[in-house]
Length: 269
Image: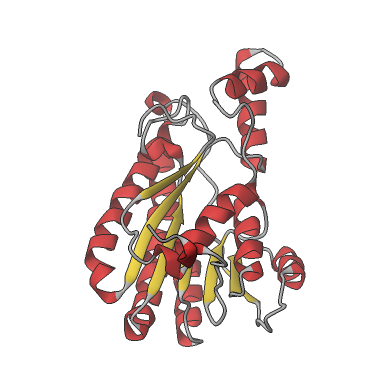
């Protein structure tokens, strides 16, 4: 069997424009940097103009990319809808990376209904509005990539993340449905499911559990690491590499699926 066609294959996104949500820190910031490194022009979307400008200025631009940013508060769906409409009017994007910080930790039995409504708006409704705004342009170009950063809780619910588990599953099923409806237009829709990744959210989960249980943060951290076959937490860059692949031509026949990036922690296929 010939394998020489694989030699020299490099993922590149030259000429593509990527909209990356939640791109001022953590996974979103790493995704924007890796997409730009692959040649894409990045549109950053978050609520803090100063931080957006700093990230935008630091993005690679060796291919002459034009990076820019828009402001939106993801706690306000009207704000996201307005930004989505403006981005679509300004030319849209070939790649949409939906990424929003997770809901607060806590057991599901004591969660108020407002917590579910807030999370539903923050994640599913915002994802949907952004996709709806960009899909006409993607269809007209005959190609598009929608990549949702969710969580391994789509496969197995995580302890003490009751609201997050519920909403993440809803986003996963929304994604699969959208993938089936858009595949004929050359548009793929996939999910990246990060496990425990070194971000501010992980630090918050560790400190919160330590305070709740009365043990040290080091003990909580060691307990989490013991569940990961790789023996370490992931990095935002490792999650970003999966996003770059799904955004590429090499992933054109992959749609409607979940890519788990968790060091082997999830106990099922």
